[in-house]
Length: 210
Ligand code: ATP
Ligand code: ATP
Image (spheres, helix red, strand yellow):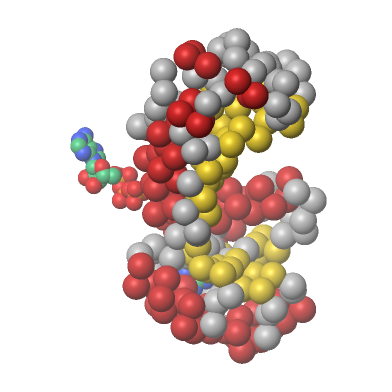
């Protein structure tokens, strides 16, 4: 993990929680000191220096994440150094659309743009009753939302195409119970959470029903 700003630190913590061994690098000694007790291994170094990264053993890692945001130059030069070292999977964080293009052309395998992605996702939550929303490239989405009041007590079999708004109910979860995959016999209960899938506009429409 290169760069321990807010994004890099949270990502490093989440990876650690997933039982991954994380080597974190930041050039700022204050940042290094701040997270030294929380993360496995935190090193102070300028990641734009290929030789320094090599000395730290970065040539042997399977995956590297460049979480530097504000300095486009430092972010691009770090990706370049990782490409030169032959790191198989390079993830890089962009802070603008142009930054994203540059990172991809320098050789990053995966470019993420958290501010844009989170902004788009949260917009869907704000204008609907969805509690979670994942959008896929090809106009397809999955969402979590409470059962619409107008459909409480109905079985899935009884829902008409007009009730469904083009979506498919994948499953449901009543508070305190475990998730169940949907069957045609399943009855929609008040307060239960639904997982639905479908086209983005259809899911959005279903999630604005009362
Ligand atoms: P965030 O938006 O994630 O909070 P930030 O705004 O605090 O980040 P950024 O400029 O995006 O700061 O940089 C993230 C981290 O990357 C900082 O802790 C910074 O010290 C570190 N960093 C910047 N350049 C380098 C570099 N060349 N080598 C190593 N670390 C670097
Ligand atoms: P981001 O992390 O989303 O890129 P940022 O780091 O650029 O945000 P923030 O300090 O989080 O900056 O503030 C976001 C925006 O809110 C800024 O454009 C700032 O001018 C504006 N802002 C801050 N305080 C107020 C306020 N009291 N009233 C109106 N706008 C404000």
